[in-house]
Length: 159
Ligand SMILES: [Zn+2]
Image (cartoon, rainbow, N blue to C red; front, side, top):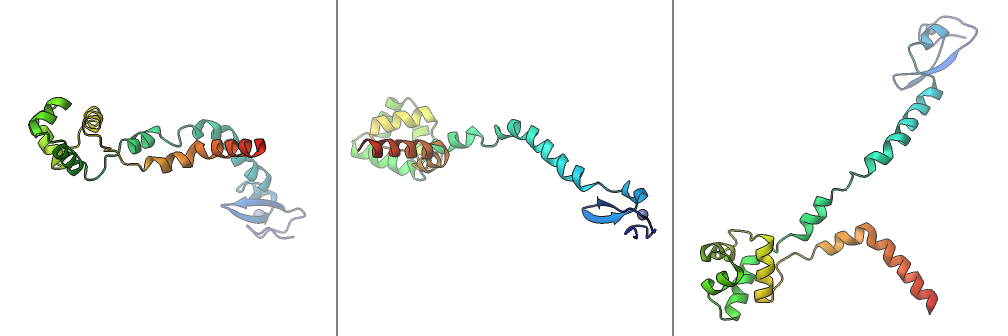
């Protein structure tokens, strides 16, 4: 038998991995490689121990938070139209919401995104919705699927 690495004739060949390639080599050349057993065992051990810790950080909560707070694109127009329908002028609405008239003017021109607390007040004052409804989809992808399915089965059994 011949060593695949150095070409030496030997009685016993050892299977090793050298830079990812499996080879039949002599005892001396085996030092350069990794035996397939230890090669496949090592990564598994590391994965098993490392995985539970790493899993937690995978989906940042900030994503969901941001998503929920996404303003509709034409928030300014919506505010302005709703305000005019109510017969309110800029000054009055600004006073009710608690912001400067000039600030509200900028908001109505889509030049400035109002802070969350002001958005809530504007929504309340004007009976409008200024946040994107895209967050529903996100919820479906996380934990709600499981709950819905379980609930569905329960209801089915009862009937
Ligand atoms: Zn050899």
